[in-house]
Image (cartoon, rainbow over all chains, first blue to last red):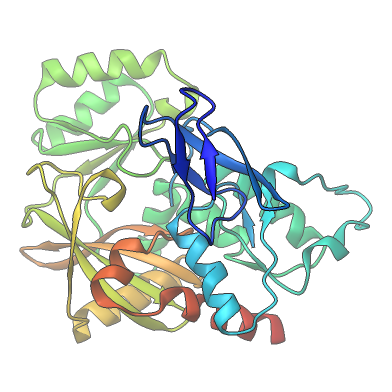
Length: 57
Length: 279
């Protein structure tokens, strides 16, 4: 499946096993994007959350 | 499985569930709302919840709400509260006689400077909550310490709970032991690639396989038990006096461990959850 970067409009492939919530990086501009929806074979992206102060393990 | 971001770990948990034909439902914590006064939302969450939120406070509060509805959570609220706070972890380790680096608690820049004198400026300042080595800073002289403390005084009050720990003489690496229930399932060395203190894989540390010796097994299990047990990442350093535990993690990342040791940690976590659900 191909998606379009919401920042620079570059088209790039997403893995076949992509899931909602997964973070992808645009190979052109480097923007981190989150998969927000997958329906009818279409992947919808949004900007990923910025790292929070309480993020980690 | 509750998540707020699908990392390599969550993706592999989903894949392991498929492989093992376990009915795992990923639930995005950011899309959840729970009526905590009626229990009517209980049915949304299945038999057991695997808590995988990357945000500590989100995961902690959500776990409390789920447990209030008698939903078992891995890891429990009590374990998450202790592991998510370095001071509470240290207190639990000391209580259980687990070797841990000398640590001093203080609340003002003046008393931190006194603590640093006591530690002969071989000390590191850590926020009590936080991960991935964020805001951890060695304080090797008074001028640097004063500058750092001045900054901290303008930050959130949590950063004015000063947790000062001795710098342990050790090789440029630490050990991450993965404990699931009452077993150490794998261990790796995390090697600093910059020669600095931080060894976290999320911050560029390199992983190498580490043999689970009797000493490592015993101390890791004791540390896991000290914080309440579950699925845990015990971090240890090789001090001249033997192994010391400096941290126990409750929402473990295991990319470095799995790719180095090839132990099926996602599968083992799910099996542990199934066992807990049947209890």
